[in-house]
Length: 258
Image 1 (cartoon, rainbow, N blue to C red):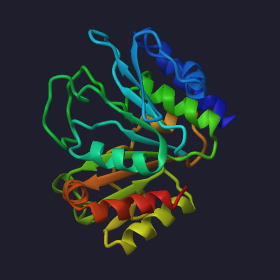
Image 2 (cartoon, rainbow, N blue to C red):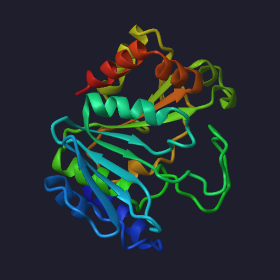
Image 3 (cartoon, rainbow, N blue to C red):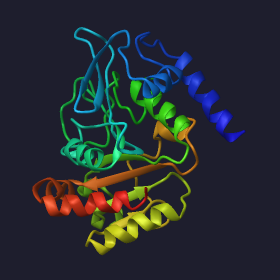
C-alpha cells in the first residue's frame, strides 16, 4: 500500500503541473531500458555499448540519461552538476566502474543563478531535480527500479561546511542519508568511508542538518531504502577529483553495497 500511495502522489504531482509532453513517463522509460531506441524530442546516441538520451536543440526538455546495460544494476544520480562543483566527475567515475545508469541535469538548478553551493535560493524558475517531480530524471529512476527492485540509487550532492549551523555539520566531510530512517546499508557505507579517513556522519542519528530533507525522490515509487543520498563537502570533492587513488577508494565503498 505504501508503494501504491507513493506512486499515486507522484502521478498527482505530475498532473498538477504544466509539463512538457516530450518528457517520457516511467512506463515509456521502462520500455526504453529494455530496448533503447529514439524517443520523440530527444537525441539518441549509441557508442561503446552505452546509450544516451539528451534533449534536442531548442527543446524545453532537460536532463540526460546514459545507460550501460553490461554494468551492475544501480543508478548514479547527479542532480546539480553545475551548482555542486565536481559532482559530475565523481558521479561519472562511479557510473563507469559500477552502475548501469547515470542521470544528470542539463540546465542549472536555478535559471538565473550561477553561484555554487548555495543551499538557499528563491528563484522561481527551478530546474532542481531534487525537488521537481516530472522530468526524465524521475521517470528513469522509477522505471529502472521497477525493473530491478534490489537496485540502489546513489544521488551525489555537494554541501558547504561554512553554511552548517551545528558542530557536526561544520566538521563533517560526508553526510549520508536514506531519509528519516535507514537500514544497515547506510552504516556499512559509513564504516567503509571512515576506514578511508573521511569524517562521515549519518542523518538523522548523528547529524540533523541535510540539504535534501525535502528531496522528491522520497515521494517516488522506489523500493524501500534503495535511495542513498551522499552529500560531499567542497574540500572532499576537490580531493576526490585531484587524487585518483582516493576516487577509486571512494568508488569501492559505494561498490561494496552492490
